[in-house]
Length: 383
Image (cartoon, rainbow, N blue to C red; front, top):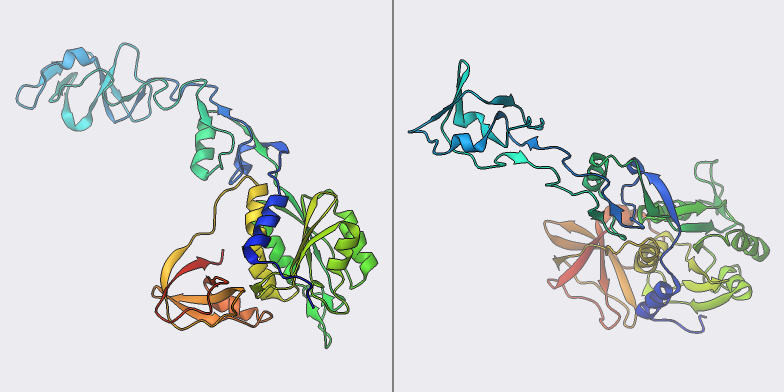
């Protein structure tokens, strides 16, 4: 039996409080900086544009020479220069007349519209001035941001390093994926793969170990070998059975702070620390592990990686009643059909195909005893 079950909100807060944003930094080529977080203000080394640039196809002119020009009273110029969008405006000219407002008649340009100084011209520094702060510390770089950095001639920038997350799958019954055919009682090790993919998707660097058998000494050795990680995730052996060693090993090696959370699925979850390194013990049932990854691990990793994006939510109508256990947070797999959430499964923590059939999940709060059909609920998509 679990000695004490922690509430889901309390467990989530405890794990997030154990985690701190990683302060390590690294210099990276800008082409490798997608979704990376800037660790110091990026200052422009140049003006952008660095020259007076035509914003339209047309003719470079002196704006003073076009005064009063209109379709009924055109102005005729001998001093002008053809120009295309993006070209430098020649010295002595300060505006561009658009093609549609002009007609070239031999060596004379007929203008049917007056232009003011800098009309249709991007002036030096109009976009960014030299020494302007382009992006402040903490900014998450998107593709257009990186394109802007490239336009400034920058080759690399300083970014926060990705947190290192050690993933330790445990279980003597586990076999590496596709290594060989399974014998009765065996299973392919897929939870570690799922955790690795999500850890990387959530902005961290995954360090996945080989499968560790159900042996307390070997589990301890695996923990000790991961001491340079920013978080350790152990998968499997987290309940209270004869071969559920992970929580006890954690208690002996460091501090076991929580063992058992009121969440369905995902109850056999443990949190603790080893030498100030946060340790998360996830259950071996894949859907339970997935629920815990979303409820607890995701927000903790986002904090460590300087990322503040929360999981998107949309409000939809529930197609059928969801039954849930009072006092427990229930993570219910649902399919989204024409804006209506169709429950797939409430229980069945080992049935991974139910996740493949689902588009996301609905959370039933611990104070509710189910949700009735037709109620509006918050739908969270699987990423």
